[in-house]
Image (cartoon, rainbow, N blue to C red):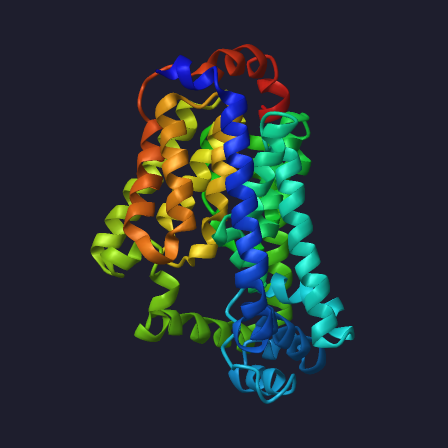
Length: 387
């Protein structure tokens, strides 16, 4: 049966091309006009833009002052919906240069940056060539979580690009640069927070160390700029995410069905252990190590929107590059359908697919890509991992 499907790869590439094209047309014709017409309410970029104004004009100690944030959002226009900015300070830093432009112009540039990040991620990671790579591109930009993330200005595409670039640098035997790039996870940490942990468990110590140093520098700068009062305000803002008003941020995460109590903590511990074990088992394949880190991250975090599932595409590409098994390919195909239907099927089927995929990395079987990984990566361990 596996041979039957492998012999028809060109046919599956054409099928993927058609499906991706249809989804992309639907996004452009149906979904995009709706969201862009209501960008004042729906686009989360307004929150980062307003926070950047607060930090630049009033000082970063007031970055998480809710009254200042509300005034800045209202200053964009009376129709703009007010919500608190709760992302880490580096996202506001990144947006600050765009505050020199009117909001609409800044939004265009930000959207172009997100699209460029999606294209860069595809360029680095998409397997195959020719028609197959084109099919992967259309499936990538067409799947609704990825498209929705661009429509609402979420920085998930930037995190995906950072992870893809870090993998590319590891493969290019530049582990220190990979760790520095990986520090960009701070833009939205929950999307890949266990990737550095997985790399450490797999022995990629240089990459982990450079990530840790770069992240520490970012953290110290943020603390200095916020000051004591700013840190206290940020802590108070984050505490709001524990209330029922923020249930939407947990709808697609493991805390949706489990809640925020002891059951969640037990599940998080199990996911952490499983991620570490999977990373160690596949330590000769950076593709599988990073994929395990992504899967573990999405299962670990209690706060997740369905647009954040674009990271599953990154994990899937890495698995395919490493020689995915028939079972893994089947899960990826079913998972893609679940992602497109995320608003209908909701969280539990997607969480189960993630869990199954992580489980395949724990199961003791050989894969198509294992032999190649053993042959190539064993020669590079000393250089890529460090003493």
